[in-house]
Image (cartoon, rainbow, N blue to C red):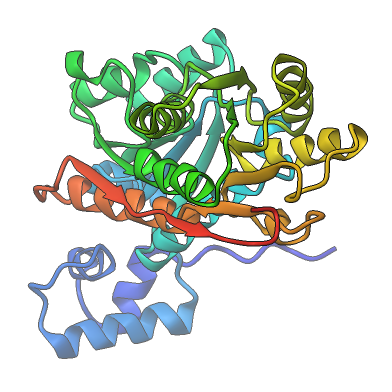
Length: 338
């Protein structure tokens, strides 16, 4: 039977390099006060022996874990669905942390009990900072953690932020939607409806605000149905809109996944897209290019949102001052559906 090889110790590295244990510790922990030739000798000894620092012991000294938590207050079925928004946010965060030599801790918090668990974990010193994405309602957790001094950055403007200011990165929802609705108006569409997102999320609120603002300015009637950013809710909401107004000739849909469901309902109702009804979505996930017909949409830089959140958090964790609000641009992408 194979015998486990003893793990090289700090003392063994010190002996091999011909220096003190304290010197090895300083080099391993990134100190710049050690002369370069000595640093090279220590690094050579570390490589030859295959020494791996004890991260738990190191964190006791440095008071850092080199780990960042990404908290998603969503059900796992939603996070790992095919809407591609969450995977791209996670990818952006992960790539930025990897470049910085940090570890990603992904946590889902869909219930009150899981919120309490996440709060205990974050406040227990297990991570150096916390990122939030997809907040619902007035979630107190970002503010609670920020007030303890833990660096916190949110993806999307937190609702109720006035009582507990937290830095955030968002996209220009309102401007993007207004450009989409303006395109429909300029194309001669007369009865423009919308399938709005959840009213407990900033993305849902602001995308509906953009639709209402553009139609109000044009003096047009607003025709609204609600969805929850899922494909099925888009299909149901589209049926509701057709019942409300069979003469509608365009619809802005607050997410591409809901727009996919809406296209299915329109096809079942015998409505041709875009001849009878033009459709524009929001997100520009990969699916948008493969719907029938290909979906016009408002592109948001999903992966860049994750990367920007992470860069902001790392700067905050390093004690730097940051802009508390960053808003990324959106872009109207026209395909055959409008």
